[in-house]
Length: 215
Image 1 (cartoon, rainbow, N blue to C red):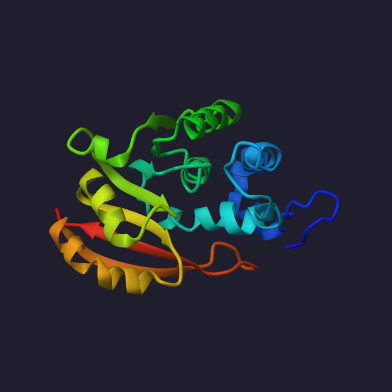
Image 2: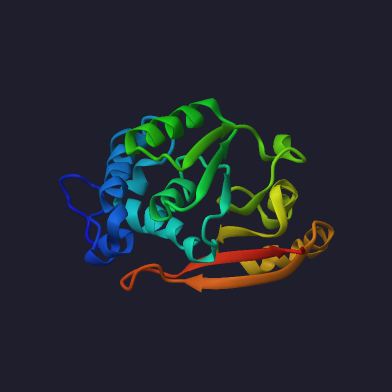
């Protein structure tokens, strides 16, 4: 991927365009919104623009293969919309709930949903813990929210029996999972997988942790 000097925003490759397919136009619109307003609204730093597509949008797409058809999905700590907005764009069959406690980020997410015409998305202003015992989802996603022990405490109560948590993680994924093994057992995790996903042929590998909950 190349970085045009005049804009400072990463230029998506043909492989990225192919990845988004029918969702390309709204994905490009989303990227434009982030480039124009993301730093101003405190959602992304100025250094993120040269890797906006590869580091954020394509990275978010890595969770999509692990979400079953027509699932109810909660994206916890959705922030700028990663991975929740990308998931909703790529998978119109899903019922996506963007869960975010901070009001300014909720306002941003609501603006994005309206601008992109995402009729499969609901924005929820709440902390994950406030929803425990009230709602449950087939799949919960999370990116850059917390270490696995904390993340499991916050998210696994929102996962239906037989459902899963799909988390985007970094190089310390295995280490985090080892530290969280007792917490995972406590919250009914039956199977743990660490997958290396390359969403586009010219892209980097993304670490995805999949936690399946007992039925």
